[in-house]
Structures are given as structure tokens and as C-alpha cells.
Length: 49
Image (cartoon, rainbow, N blue to C red; front, side, top):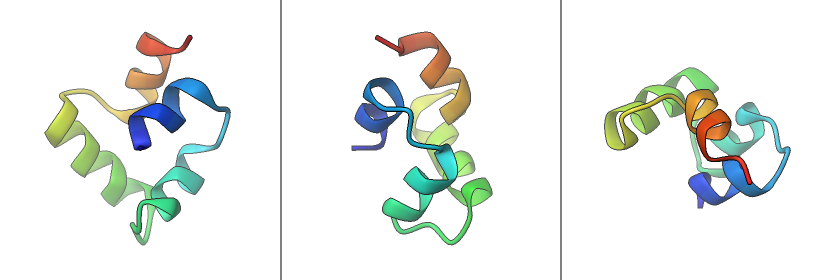
């Protein structure tokens, strides 16, 4: 879901983090990077449609 929001919307990363149940965007970014291998910002830039 987060990947889809990052590539298909302009929703801020802080809002995506909240939607995914994270208390702050830093925790979300850390978890995202651990799973995907890049930060949410890097992912958005790389895969934006």
C-alpha cells in the first residue's frame, strides 16, 4: 500500500506514515528502507509514474 501511495499520489510521506500506523515518519522511513532497500523519498523519485 505504501509503495502504491508513493508512486501514484502526491500524498506527503508523513501522511503515508500515519496511514500505515506509524507514530512518526522517521520510524516509517527506517522500516521502509529496511524492507525495500531505499528510503520512501528515494523510492518515490525512482518509481514515480
